[in-house]
Amino acid sequence: MDEDLNNLNEEMDNVIVLNDEDGNEVNFEFLDLIEYDGEEYVVLLPISEEGEEDDGEVVILKVEDTDEESEEESYVSVDDDATLNAVFEIFKDKFKDEFNFVDED
Image 1 (tube, one colour):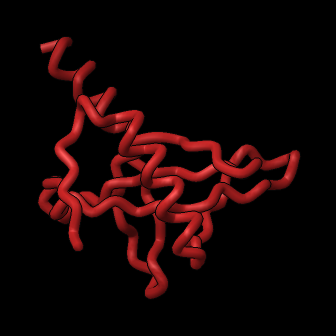
Image 2 (cartoon, helix red, strand yellow):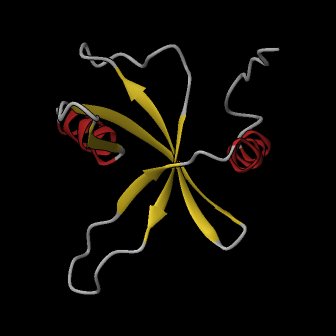
């Protein structure tokens, strides 16, 4: 039973809860932190209400600097398609052996 609890704790450690534009809480699985062009970006996988992973589409958000006093990070959306594509390409290359990527053309 302890092993099950440890597995659950490990899974919960990878879950980030963010608020969407309507103030609703949305759970994401943290996949990676990517450095690109002097900035840091998180790669997140949305988790549905039932705890299931969504359709596999990841979300990439830029990590914003926070106050020195507060240890919380803030994440902002990235509007630049070139940056998003570059970060995603780094992520795909890094995890090519762990995930099956489907190119949507």
